[in-house]
Amino acid sequence: MRWIAFLLFLLPGVALANDWDALSEHGVIAIMRHALAPGTGDPPGMQIDDCATQRNLDDRGRAQARAIGDAFRARGIAFDVVFSSQWCRCRDTAALLDLAPVQEAQALNSFFGDYTTRQQQTRDTRALIDRTAGRLMLVTHQVNITALTGRATRSGEVLVIRPTSEGVELLGRIMIDP
Image (cartoon, rainbow, N blue to C red; front, side, top):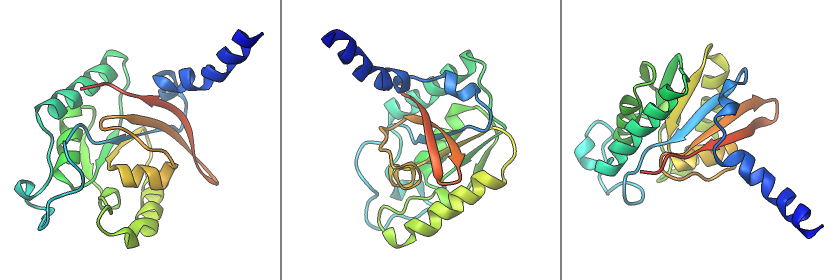
């Protein structure tokens, strides 16, 4: 009897650990934290239009982004558009995924250094999701993902979500390690 209780306890984690099937459901969104970019935040003086002033993907992060794109293609998962934060690490991740045309979206920019924009950017992200037809992926930052979903992610992790009237429902998590 203890084993049954233990297994039932584990099932929700197992179901969400690597849930590719959730991507086949109608109306789902893939939201991804940029691939591995060692460090936290950005250096002082960061400028959005100058990658040299930002924390960027390293070799492992670039390889991780390519591997994630390969894994999606191997499963026949396609997107109509990939929206990306304007930060270089997100744009580079989105481009290296090579899953769909990439469009920058200011709503997905990090507010790590200025939480006063959190609520407005989260509303703007939800509006972006609501007004976009087709299958979409969002490439953004930890703080943005947590604000929208209430969940934390590792670098390169993809959450599969469905918009609801109360926010979003988490359907799955996909992680391809670097």
